[in-house]
Image (cartoon, rainbow, N blue to C red):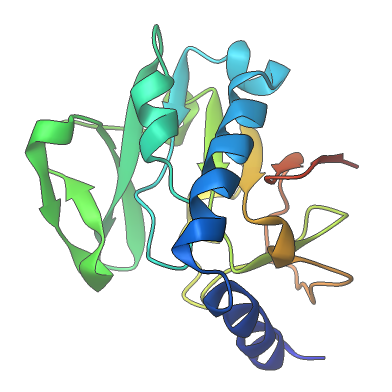
Length: 179
């Protein structure tokens, strides 16, 4: 199955989840992530501001006490990393809330990245939205890469090529997957 067909399948799966299913799933996934050793040991964390079909990081960002949190911001074909401040978010590229400000940091300043996806397989291969933003950002990065998705977004196989960057561990509302 190619990436386009896989995206359609996963979109249907997440669309079938209503808000009554998404809210407890967010609580469960966030609790798992907050206790994950890779997250606990991180001083600096790059999260994301979720699209409607992604697992929200709102609770995670609110509970990340003692950590310096960052969000990505689209700049052309790349992502910049900017400190998270809920009071200074603005709708940016693709309608995603992005941080304002001129001060950016490099990926080498980040200990753990919470990586969104359309889907993951059990080997940590990631199916993104097809623009390559996270693959470019994470190419050669030494930080811990943590996938964060609903359990229904785990699939048997994600086709990958030489530019795709896999994650180290995946956290869902039902499980933690290490490979």
